[in-house]
Length: 361
Image 1 (cartoon, rainbow, N blue to C red):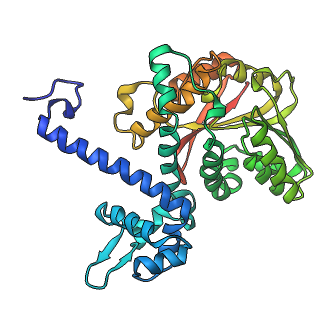
Image 2 (cartoon, rainbow, N blue to C red; image 1 turned 180 degrees about the vertical axis):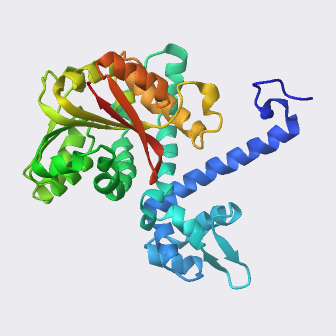
Image 3 (cartoon, helix red, strand yellow; image 1 turned 90 degrees about the vertical axis):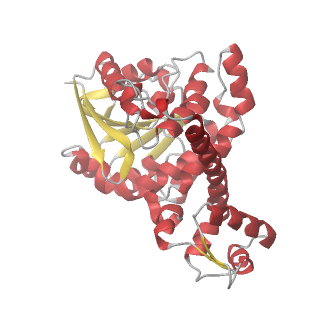
């Protein structure tokens, strides 16, 4: 039976075909958990430096228990992540796989993303309550989120922020060198602020985030780097209350999480000087579901939205925009906040995000 127009091909597949596809889904979900363990324990990093090795040699290299490592290798071999020589009883991580699974891969290390699966599973019971009763799950209940997010964004920012992202705005790097006032809204652990503070010592940088724990980490990094021009505050960014105080305001993957994103954007517009720039980095997607059918991480991002980004906003009786709020909605909200000119750029080293460059005039 042919599928109808606008109907995805999967809608006409047989029960057997779907069952096979779902079995693969279960296998891939299991591999995501094993990938998270491999990343956090350093097993992928250790294997990338080893020749074909026994489970004991791999365990020794990573400083881990052999029996657990051997069972982990069983999942990775059957999942075709790791190769196995049955005669020699040795395991190897192919170089092409290491390029996506090790810390040496930098922003190409997709293993970082696998940590979200376990984190989201830990709040499943609370999300079920929300399905039945509404409301949301508070940010504080996601204990590992800041760590994972800081690791993920840090890997990208270390490689791209100074040399690729900031130059997307014509003349911005030169102004930062001369010295301007910068604010990062929803700064998290503050790594982006600290990178800019180190690169542009004449500029004055601030970071605001409502998480006191994240702000303490940001301050610790600034102290360790001797960055006297970086300052951090635990602030509710829906109530910025500042007027024409900054030449550059940034928001890295932060706006869609806000309880009142419209108020945050309006506050940013007021806090920006007339010739200033708002650089908003957020998920590259459409606001229309049918236009996200071929999104490479669509199921993952809608899941993260349902079980984190949307729910933390709803927990505060917020808008619940969600991760996949998309380009159309973003443009609409930026215009309503007072930004008369918005351009969207892409970064070749970051396929996940869109880079919004907004000006008030």
